[in-house]
Image (tube, rainbow, N blue to C red; front, side, top):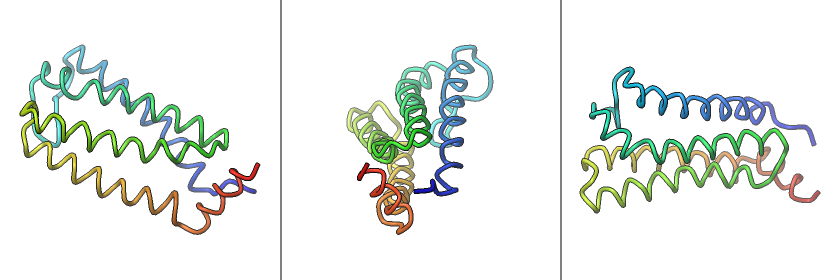
Length: 139
C-alpha cells in the first residue's frame, strides 16, 4: 500500500522536531535566549530542572517516530500517543508535588489533551490512515 502523503510529511516534521528538542536543550545549557514553559518565562535553572528531562525524552520519541514512519512500522503511531500521555502524566505529577506553577501545569495538560485527541483521531480513526496501518499490520 502506498504511504499517505501526510505520513511522509509527518516523518520529516518528527525528525525536525527531534533535532529542535536537542537544540533547545543545548541553547538552555549555553544560556541563549528566553526560557519559557507554557508560555511563561522561567529561570534557566528551572527550565533545565523541570523542562529539559521530558524535552529530551520527547526528542528521543520523535526520532523513533520519524524512523518508524519512514520504515513503515505499525508501532510508530503508538509512540505519537505516548508523547501526549507522557506530557499529561509529567505535568500532573509536578503539579501535585507543587514543583510546577499550576497555570503552566493546566496549560500543558490542556494542550496535550487537545493535540492527543487529534492524534488519536488521525492515527486510529481517520479512514485512510487507519486502513494504511491495518495493511502494515497484516504484513
